[in-house]
Image (tube, rainbow, N blue to C red; front, side):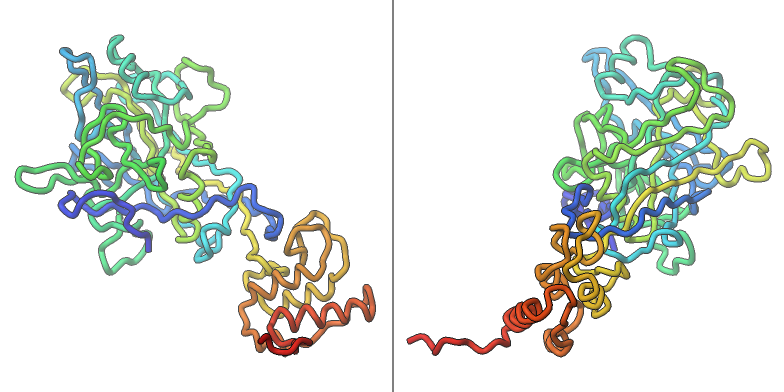
Length: 431
């Protein structure tokens, strides 16, 4: 269940839900063991769909075009505020529980790299020029004032936020009807007079532990994450900007180009979003570009990309589904010396077996405190995190490791009884 992180009032257009956030665990203390790295790969999304507010054909279809709308006020030389400047977007979602154990604390997923790929068939209405330079509000405005952005526009990827009570993706049977599916209308006009309301929207960190609606970050305008329902323009770095191998800046994009979106994990909110998604068993993203998007029969505008969706399979020989690759590790809980996900007597047995032994690398095995040797402090780490009762711990008895003989056994006896409050005091009661 993803909590409501919105800061909008009760009169706002819809409740805003995004993944809960966890603590970043990259660069952990070595006192926590680390499981073996597990690169995971998904060869197609569980869901891909087109989001576009001005079309009844939005939803599942063979191609999902991406384009935007930027209009400059000639009197101010600034953008007019917009209802939706990121107009046509592609949503992709991957059910991850088959390769990434769900249900763990989000902070146990140590994520090293994430890549999404998606294939563009061709530019609708003409050729597209390649760039991997991200688009800022200042660059967008300068481009429009100079005559338009043209076709040299980056392909950008963001997270996804939900509104109106939606809490995730419908990737299978969903009797409640409360999760986003390809059949749901992803953009709505509500109220009298009608006002815009999104079901899904591109999101980035708001810098305060939450997530912000990036739909109109370039122009300002409507926002589902602001209490007022409006936002000024703000810089919203994409979590990944699409790149093409073997294509230089400014070159025309080849037909059927597969873009790689390599995530910038140093951006605020990205790791937390990914950790929460793995814990929930699903990750979703928004692909956006601000190409001009000419409409059939209306003229004007610039060519825009057409991304392959799953519905194109079988009808188009060059079809290629979006993919997801995650290189991650599952961090063991403190005291989980056998890395089976539970701190129990098996971990105690591992500690006894390794007692007095040096550990390499530091922090692995039964080295719970990360000092490079298995000692009494590592027993304390296990005891304080064991998922068994104090009486059960006391009943285990005092081990007699071979290293150190009788002296170690005496010290261990003291550690056991003092730690559990069972040792008799050598002093009388205080007066």
